[in-house]
Length: 241
Image 1: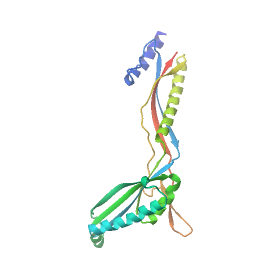
Image 2 (image 1 turned 60 degrees about the horizontal axis):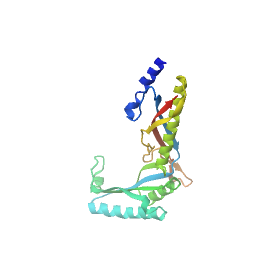
Image 3 (image 1 turned 180 degrees about the vertical axis):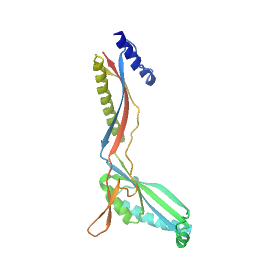
Image 4 (image 1 turned 180 degrees about the horizontal axis):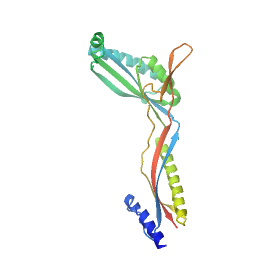
């Protein structure tokens, strides 16, 4: 018993590092466990990054062309039923172009200035495909990222934390049995990791989209929604009998 008590005190004294409120002594025997767990679900929301980028020989021409085309794109998105509050300006740029040495002399002359507008559009996953197609048809020439999310990320994080705590209890129970005792109630628990989401989607990358052929032999963009993942690390302390 003396050896067993010594092992308890040595192995479980680490709890003092995480919380000064937890007293580890012979009268208060505990088991401390750190457990990782993740939860993966289907996305509910798509955040599209759509924009228009153009060049011109003068600053005014670049600005006017961009404003006209942006107006057409935004009006088309609104007409498709996307609420105005779900559209946010992401990028806005007007300035002199950094000339590319690979451009022809005519291209360098015609591309003295550039303008860019882009928007983040949040909508249900089921509507993402149609809005992308419609925006490109309306003149959008940049489709940068598609971020996949859930409507309640806090609830997803809570689910991951609950799964991590259940795993911690299972580990602690096995440890208690190995020590010839029984696991008691939860004394302390903390979630030590924020929510993490899977957002790796790039322009026309096969992770997020593909181009297929329809009967008319026109290319069609196809989105493949990614799972949304939340991870949690739980530090839990359980009493033992």
